[in-house]
Image (tube, rainbow, N blue to C red; front, side, top):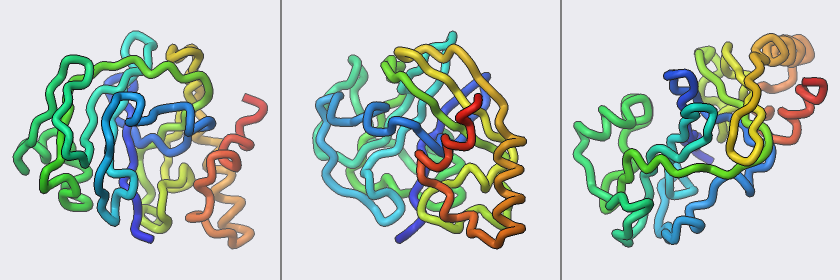
Length: 197
């Protein structure tokens, strides 16, 4: 299976990859917005790409790109088709690394700023390690030098813990024991590392 493009999360004015969600099925569902996905690409089987943000400790859905034939407003924001130039400006990292996956009838919702009423833990990451970059289907936190654990209660982020050292120790352990790094993307396995946090 092709590497899947990750959602991102902006925290402290920096964009991170959203690499693990403890309770993923209760985090975000496009269907809750009244939109039906119809279509996908090999690099995006979900048919959507989201950018989340933490603003004043509140979790928000900021932007959404979605494969749908519907042109329904979300939070009073109408969808629009955007040019390749705009895609590069708004989803530049994805475009430059993987090419556009949202051409051909896809809708972009920018600046939605919808609260995400989630309770649980999120792991965000940045500063990828080149040799581990695109190895598995999903991003593993082990592929990044910087990892932050966000503790969220009813959509409010009440604690952020730098767990980069814990992830680094797990990466080193796997290298020593010759355990594949790409296989470490299962959410339940990832969060077991932080059971004492």
